[in-house]
Image (cartoon, rainbow, N blue to C red):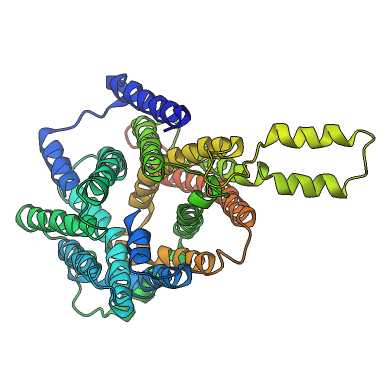
Length: 475
């Protein structure tokens, strides 16, 4: 393995260790032992493509399988979200474990229809994963009377441990099962089924049930209308949904594009190690988020503008470092008297590799650093968006509204995935960068609206403390 990868990984590991070990009492919340027990109980609770290739399916068929997953999440997500609000979030979390276990079992079949069914089940499970668990946590946290600020601790830890550390360990464990023990590409899915069973047992034995709006006289259509009305009536919720869709849509598109971006000429890159590096970057971001959320300033609505802008710049790097674009620009510009200098400036900016299976190019190195920055932004995004959702989304329809947010996200990802071969990669990255820039602008609008709402609420409280003649009641 080339030293460059080890240097990047080592640098990130050092930064994560420094951030975690240097936290002071000001960077931590003072919590109760009851909350720590509750938080720990909640927290306990890239082989798919390879498997499909192993069964002999081509890129087109594999693309349709992935589209089926996102499509089913879009079609069934709102329904399962509403059922979670009405029938119980704990029950929905158990349903997630069962549904995703069934999806893993379908991986044993090489039949295309069976695999398609598995992707549909996986899409439904994804909708439950991204709504039911968070909804249960917020409702249970509030029901037990814990400080609202303490939610940030659980959110940040969930991303640090779940999306970061556990993702790295899972990737390494899967690599051992497939490459070292030679158990085949289905082995990681069998292991996942075992861990899902353990998680389901913990949920069943230790979690209590909570609901959104348990009214028996409300059917699903009424719940849909209520959630849609809540989104339309509150600009903050609308902005939050748009921001989430823009960022997550760009993030999922990045997942499909980073491999060809780093190896356009089939350069020999360590995919597993790079994935672990990305997860370490996400851990760095979640560690930064935990510090930011522990302080009253800057507010989450404020610093997320910078995060979205930084992520936009990071995903613009594949466009900036593309030598073909610069060659085209230089070709349409008026001819300079020193054409050789112009060509040399292109080579200094990007040193492309034309050797099949060679080492990563200089351009790839720059992009990898940019992708690590983007993944760090992802690590900041998740606990921060969870914090804003807990503030702005009404409790009675939380799961339903959260899955409404995922409809435009899934539409965008399906369209992007369907056209991934038709559009140049630079266009795809440029589009993602533009969406992230738009998210930064919308985040600015959300901050302004939140400040106005906060100011009006404070004025109303001040008026309530005055008698009819304008004299303070406590004076």
